[in-house]
Length: 345
Image (tube, rainbow, N blue to C red; front, side, top):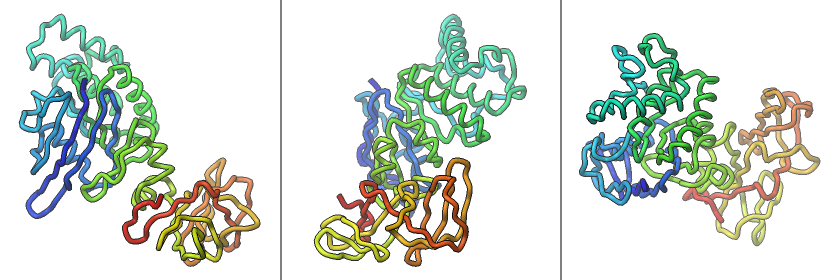
């Protein structure tokens, strides 16, 4: 069992607080993604779990054992870095075997593990090559194979695909998900790329300003953001937001139209661009920019003086300057408290 429990972990660097009393439980064999913009604290949290940084306060537990006082080598973890850290003077075989040799494993076991993980990562034919002869994608596979060869309880990955081109990232995402499911390893994966997070994760922890804002399944994070930040950060394009004013019990006036909403003192209206439909009745939108995207067209418009985006079918003919009417799908409307920015149930 490799359940990870983070209890009240905080980290200060002088006067700067990178993490604010973070609590998070990651189940055995779960693939957890820490998602957020640069400086949100995700890499600091990963380094604390790894033992590369000491928490200012709080506890880290792995497999029912408190480890925040232990060095990295005693935590049962392996790590894959953004820059691969593949040794140029060693062959692929010796790169994968490096940690095993440091642990003084018998040669037969070294060969078994290296061969197994190399085949798993589709680099069995490269074992005699040096890293200078490899592509970026192949070096990334070597780094992952080296981590898997240690048969760790936990694998930590810090933006491991960020140096690859778009097509290779797509290929590696699919491979990683399959390989780590087979290895039955608990995985924590740090990224700022929401597509990676949505496609890889069993759960996503969205971070902002040293806090975990929401930790949930990808579909839940996308459809039911717990805070305005989550709606604005996840999604390309992100959620639209419009001010709302009360118009009777449970009804709200938004850009001249009335919608059913929460029983609250104040609320902000939110809708995702793909949850809008061109209709005869709805929000009046003046089109500013039209971007054809193959099967869909992205419209950037203005509604009640606010920027507003919609994803429409490509056969819908619109041009800059047109005024169109956009109707939100009723059950996809979300509401947020304009002061706390938290979702209103």
